[in-house]
Amino acid sequence: MRLPFAAIACLCLALLAQTTFAQPKKTKAAAEEADAEAAQQRTVAISLVTSLADEARSFKDMTRRARVQARAADVLWDTDRERARELFRRAWEAAETVDAEAAKKRAEEMKRLESEGGPVVVRGGPDLRSEVLRLVAKRDRKLGEEFLKALDEAAEKERNEVAADQRRRDPSTRLGASQRLQLARRLVEDGDVERALQFATPALNAVNTDTIFFLSALREKNAQAADSAYTALMARAANDPTSDANTVSGLSSYLFTPFLYVTFEPGGGAKQSRQRGPTPPPDVGWAQFRALGACALDLCAVADGLFDGYVDFGDESHGVWDYLGGVLICDEVGIEVVDAFDRPLVHFDVAARRTPVAGVSPKLTESLLAARRRTSV
Image (cartoon, helix red, strand yellow):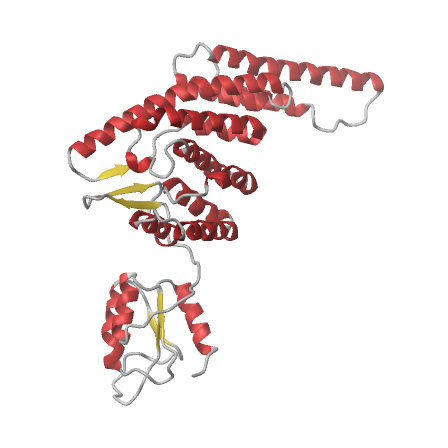
């Protein structure tokens, strides 16, 4: 009976690990015997992995072939790097075949949806090269860069098959940049933020789905690094004469709809790309304010998402008729409006005044309250 790769790999790792544990003090003869036994077990484990990797070359299932060869290379890296590199290359070739077929099917599906005149929702399909790259990048950065360069060359050959909105920024390198950012995102998910930034930085020069999704994923691990990269990207977009509504939409995704990216077409249609379910927006603080001149309208703007929050710096500015309508609208969408000095907003004293404060999140409301209470007008 043929054992699955996972079982064989676990067995091999267990055998390999035995050689690393400290041995109790023994006689010279016993120690030599133990060392010989450990060396034999190590040889057996390496032989099992090598045999399975060789057998994988005959697998008809290309996905299985790529995964087995890549994982075998990862296991063998510490003992035989040349052999591991050869297996990584074989895994990459198999992954290219699988991804090319998957891309063809996605393109056909997009054409079908566009021909039907309905909305086109782009969903990321399986990407086997990313699985291989994740293992390669952890072991050999030079080889990882080589594979990324191959993706750039593939992008050049495939540019006539890619939709115009996917290659608008840089037709000759867009796909390579996409793969680079997807690899970086997977490294972030694995907790290797430093290595992820090394791979991602060359591609953080345009507003697109891969850039924004990477930054959203990065922010969950390192908010400071993500916000810094986002600020640089926003400054670049501000100075780019080709920036348009889609640029603004993409930048807004990072702040308001993480992992949901919306683009607009000249004819009035729109496309959505979602890589995760509804995700709460990040708390990035606030840096400016606007006033419409009516408290109720300002509160409605908060409820609508136009404003992040509302705070009035007048001590005794508003009667109930000024704000209760807006309070009701906020309440309907789940936003709490409070008084800056903990007084009830609903009352029957026509002479009493209040100072409403509202934020799109409880944390923002607390920040606005703290700022208001520190200030006296």
